[in-house]
Image (cartoon, rainbow, N blue to C red; front, side, top):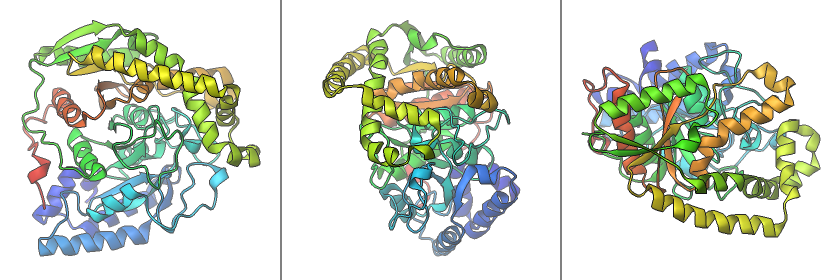
Length: 457
C-alpha cells in the first residue's frame, strides 16, 4: 500500500475504477503516513480525519455500485489553509485570523467534494499569502523536498510539500503572484496558474482580488488537467496525441536576467529538448512586461492593504515584520497613482497579447533562484527582500498580464520551466505542457495517457 503514496492522482483513480484500490484503505494509508511523518505538523495546519474517512467510505460504496462521480472519486487531496472548510479553522497562516471557523465550504471545495474527492486537511501557507518564498515564523514553515535548510516556496508552501513528501495525491493552492508555481517548481512538481476570474474564489480568503487565482499542484500534467476540470466545472482536456512538432515558442529575454546557474541549467535543458522535438524557439523582447513589473508596488500593495488594513492595524504585533511592512507599503501610494497604474496595465496587456499571438506559448525559467536558506532569511533583511522579489519576478508576469501559466520539472532539482499563454487558454496550455512533460519522462510514452473525459464515470 505504501506505493500508493507515490502514484499520480489519475493512476489512483484508475486503480479505484478497476477495483484494485479501496478508497477507505487508500485514505487510511495517507492518514497513517501523515501521523508518522516527522514533518507532518509543518505541512498540515489541520487534518480532517473524520471527514476524510466518511468521504472515502461513500466513494467506496459508489465504486462497488458502479456509480463513481469522476475519475478522481475517492482520491485524497490537500487544501491550502485559505479555502473555507465547514467547522474547521481556516486561518490563512496568520494569527490575525486565529480561531476563524467557517460554517460552509469554499465553492471550489464543495464542488470537488461533489465529484468525490477526499479532503485530507488544510496545509500551512505564507502569512495571508503575501510572500513567494514560503517562510512563516508565525505558524509554520513547511520543508522543501530538495533542501532541509531551505524554504519550500510560497505562498502555497504546505500544498507543495504535502504532495512532494507523499502526504497527498495533489494539493489545491492559490496564485496571486506565483504562489502555486514557485512551490511547485522548488519541490519538482507541476503547478497550474489559472486565468483570474475563471475559477470561483467564493469562500477563499483573499489577498488581492484582482489577481487571486486558484490552481492545483500535482505530480503530472494529467493530474493538473483532471483537477482543473474539477475546479472549473468543465470537461477534462483531452491530452492524447500532445506533440510539440511544428509549435512556435518565444523565450522572453528579460526573464533570463539575473537567473542563477542551476535554474539556467534546467531551463537550457528544457529548451534543448523542446527544440529537438521539432518546435521552433525564438528569443523576444517585451518592454511592456518590464513596465508592468514596475507597476507591481502600487497595484499589489494598495489592494492588499485596502483589503486588510483594519484587521492588521488592530493587532500589528501579531504579524511577521517583513509581511507587515509589505502590507503597509500600500499606504504610501495615492488613489490617483493606483488608478493610473491600473489603466496603464490594461493597455500593456493588449500590447502583450498582440506580441505573443503568433506563438503557441512563451517560455521562461519559473524562478531565477533556488530555494533560499531559512536561517539567513530570518537574520538578513536585505537578503529576504531581494530573494522574495526575485522568486516572484517571472511568475508575477503571468498575473499582471492575466495569462494562464504552468510550471513543469526540468530534471534539475528545484528548477522549473514555465509556459505562459493568453488568459482563458488553459486547454491549449495543458496540451502543450503534456508535450513538454513527455520529453522528461522516459516511460511517459509507454504509459496510458488517457482522455480523462472518457475515463471513469
